[in-house]
Length: 241
Image (cartoon, rainbow, N blue to C red; front, side, top):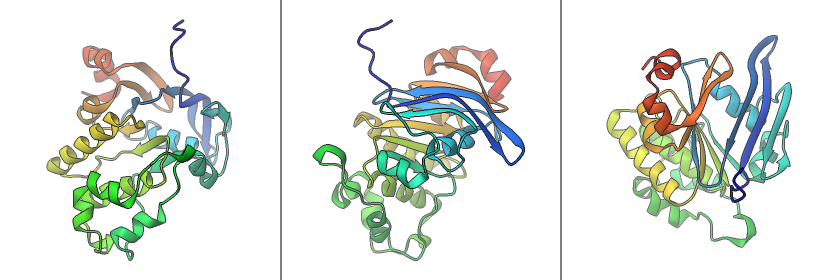
């Protein structure tokens, strides 16, 4: 065992979850180390979004544990999980369409931990120049890609230690996906820990360090992105690519 291996920012142990009487997660375990981008891959309905929702407290797990920075946060309400340092970007974005870009960002503002500089309106606008251009525009008038950038930016304003991204490239035009990838790579370069749920394998492979492949609510494969790129059988069996 590597003595110098850092403690995970997030560790999920044996999660089981239900929607009503439907058993949807079966013993899901994963972890994300500081500064890692970890991809949750799988076809539609594999359990990726459910895993993120269980971590976030939106769907409290039936069994298993969610450990964040060494603390058991299993089943905490979402607002408490968020305040502890877990940022969640949902697939449906959920921006405030009648508020301006600036006002949406202010809604997400929360001071950084331990007196760090953290994200501010100014640094967000430097990082997402398109949002600086649109700062006084109603969020509902933004394009889909701009709304996705705004949702990520609003979450970053909470200065999370880990960012949970649910299908961020879904429904976006290729040119917008490339711009989003560029911003995620820049976040990675800043040391932001990210857990990324994606169907788009090509997108995930360009940013992730490791991957967990889900099928029918179970982890079927875990390895580095480089290993997954070499394993055609796993890709064909579980990802159809």
